[in-house]
Image 1 (cartoon, rainbow, N blue to C red):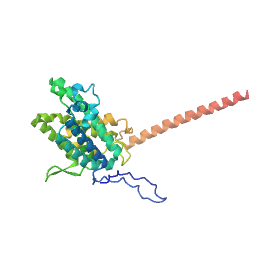
Image 2 (cartoon, one colour; image 1 turned 120 degrees about the vertical axis):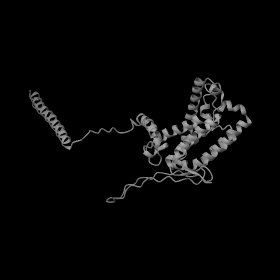
Image 3 (cartoon, rainbow, N blue to C red; image 1 turned 90 degrees about the horizontal axis):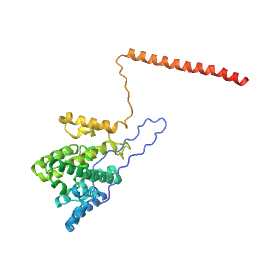
Length: 319
């Protein structure tokens, strides 16, 4: 298949004199039709990692995160995201990468797509290590220190957040007869994974990576990514706010969290807006008149000072 080409933002051209034609808007994001070459190459990496573990089981110690060995083997926090330990995980991650990537990569471009994958996988690896160490100190179970942690599911969770941003109304098939819109997929996956963590205790190892993958990807897309379609940094729209990831009934819980990160990450990037409370137009008019009088008095005083200084300068020159 031919590789999908990234969507390019249109170049703004000045309209001819006397023309009132508005500037062309950025192109809308549309679902991809073909699997991209980049995604196919990454599938080879995922399948190759699984095959490597079957041929050399001891390589897991050098590629996956084992908290008790991570300090000597620091690179594992960066490689663990591409290592699947079981065949269903390798197949599921490969399919998720292909189907999500064909919609995301054409909109972002290959460079930004790969940057997103590397960033999310790396941060998820670091957070998974910290979470395992924290659980060990809380529960005292040595299993948290020796259980290998790896998998592409953190990045897949980030893809769901990206699809919510790019194609929120895209219907994703869940079963043969049931589809769910992309904007609700992150919340559905978190709820489903949380329930499975109680039913299947071993699946709790996936939950921290899923949650961190979603949240880190939202932070990056919301505040830091340079949008290739608009050229703007981040996505401040209300449709991509943190509370929009959850149902409206959860707003009392999600709004304070959103406001906290909005103040932390956007305080310096937003222009300073100072609004004076004006409840009475008459008072506002008087306030402006007083300001004008003060400004006129200062200008008159400065002019008078310059006038006095000029004769003194002439007298000194004549002497």
